[in-house]
Image (cartoon, rainbow, N blue to C red):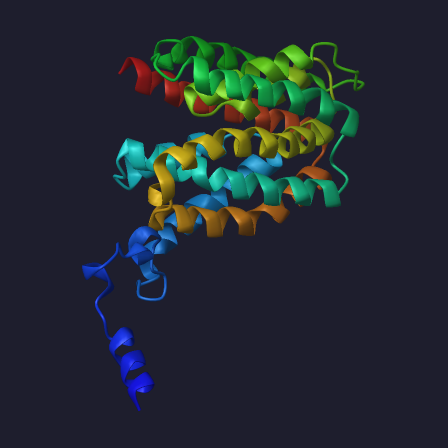
Length: 280
């Protein structure tokens, strides 16, 4: 009769008196009201739908809306977006592979330099303020956006094999790690300028982004622990993963001219918003 009594005492013992209670390190979804998650689910869904179809802007859209529209602190918004991108890029990449939107030769030429650039950006610029260069980069991307809109109006022309891929992947990974985003905007837009087919450009860049993001996020999560996984993160994750297959379908069925035009317009809008925020 003594053994059951001990088990009963252990079961009712307050764990906080003897060891740390780690149950609060992750959001308790069973006890939470799921209604407050809905805005974050919708934001994640919309951002990933655009990113999966156009190859850019998941981080930009999420960070902007979280901070400006919902009042989330910038540090929390950044942590949430970086943590969730590891999962959304995986889902998006798998979807693009299944829909045959990936040029595998281009993928390997991008992914390896991209990871190297991402690691270099994370370590070299960890103590340097990269925000000074952001308006310059955004101005450059806005110019690329105008050019792509012009190309779409004129007609995309015959697809060509890009010449500058490895340096582009290196620069895109470096800027993404240093500035908190920009892989898709930098790499997708420049590949389109070089004459690549929009469908395979978007699919390949999205798939390669998983390896870049997971490399950067591994260090990020190792530093912050589970603090990055807030309720906002769970909402963005649910919406982003749900939208990933739809983005791959859109890019597969959209005409090259239309897709290029949308990419150009998105670059102009997001760059203008970033420049306004930086100089305002």
